[in-house]
Image 1 (tube, rainbow, N blue to C red):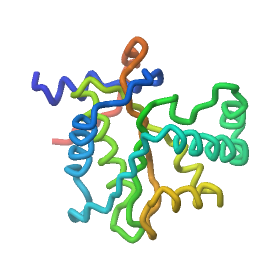
Image 2: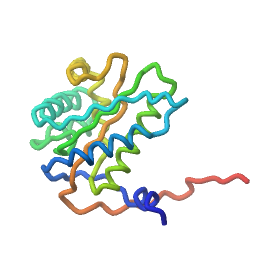
Image 3: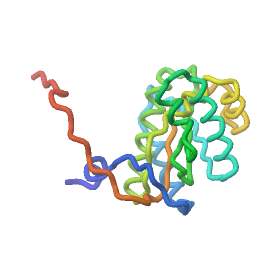
Length: 186
């Protein structure tokens, strides 16, 4: 099997991270992979905001906790009540992917870019997990203010994010694949 297929089949969401920061050269490789994701009409509508500053991560987490409590979903409210709440599982690197809201397919562009980020991280031995909390943050004024402070360009909307770092636990086993998810017409 090719290295690419092995990486795809072995990647799992990691939710326990070491505090050790990922290497700068590995971060650059991960970001480069994101930039090479497919995008509608090659618009490359994305923008990557990388946060590695502990104080900024703490602030994002506080705003996320507030957004979880306010959003109205009981599971999110319960999660926000935890003493050790961390929207991004205490990962040392958090990457927000936003895209130009006037692009042809900004949601798909962002999702494909995040997928590339995750696969590149796996290839480099770095754990990752999709973090949907960024979408809840965008529903609050506090979240919108935070995104402005983070330098997300005007007219760009956050569509997804990921937590990145070295796995501190066991790599999760793959869940069984659902049956009957493919139709082939010849």
